[in-house]
Image (cartoon, rainbow over all chains, first blue to last red; front, side, top):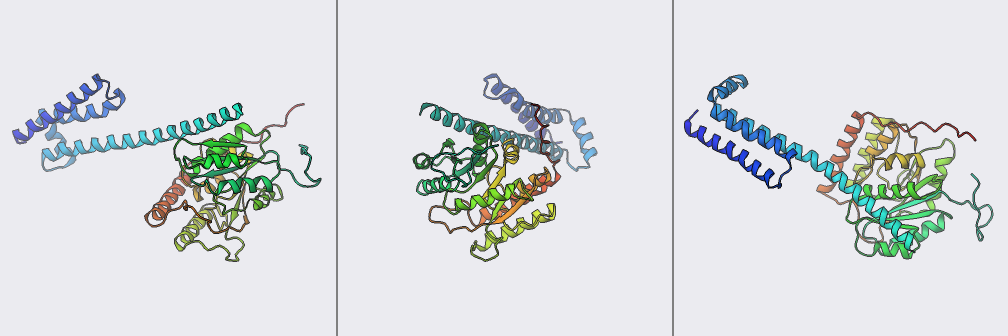
Length: 115
Length: 265
């Protein structure tokens, strides 16, 4: 792997990890959501820093260039994160619906109690 | 259960105590009042609950003025199915000895007098747990839906037949009567948000409920906006229901609870 590729990937992975940790520290990101992101950043940085690991992986998946393996895994993790969010959003929507219905029922009761 | 009689009600006229009429309404301030009044007149003793699905146009006030027993106002628009579910939840919690729920749309296209026929089909042999008022069962062609809608209804009818063996001509109809068991089942988390359609019928059939259809007539829209959009939305809707039917068939059916043992006295 070209050393320039290597440096870019290490810097990218490391900054991702640092940015996530900072967001968690400021309580802008909940711990449970940070896990997948931290894994993504760590794996990118690790694979870039240890070329032997990346070479083994490249042979394993039958790819031509180590760099494409690196970005393939980055993309895979991004997909996993998106899917994770879709699942969470579906659940949130259900919870919001239940809340809206409960509020409507409570308000109807309160109104009936007043009159 | 003996039926309560009130002054002014002729002897022999059927009363509908224990029946709730759920009317989901979205931006129907001008029409919902007439529907509430017609439902009360058609079904003496019925409890009318209107669910205002985040209209903000005075729909709730109009329903109250017309004498609805309860008006549940959703803080924002959830969709037709979620609005119905709100009504079911209210009925389960508030109607003593709930025996059935009927539902009709707030736009005046359904004639509440026909709710009697739907309710009769619940009780009369062979009996049913869900009775669907079909616009097409009469076969007289009085109701002409737009071509795309007709194609969708035919497609969903075929889906229902392929998966359950039931021959239904109008699985999309919102004009229905439901037994208390079905209402409890739906209020327990089976309702889709937007439109309960073939997917729900298949789910109920798999859960062991009996489903019947009776012919009804339906008036053309008197005004306001239709709930079903055309074009891309229709395609999206067809896709959604088909997908939903597919996963419903793959899901393990949530069986209806067995009837409770007879009470010891």
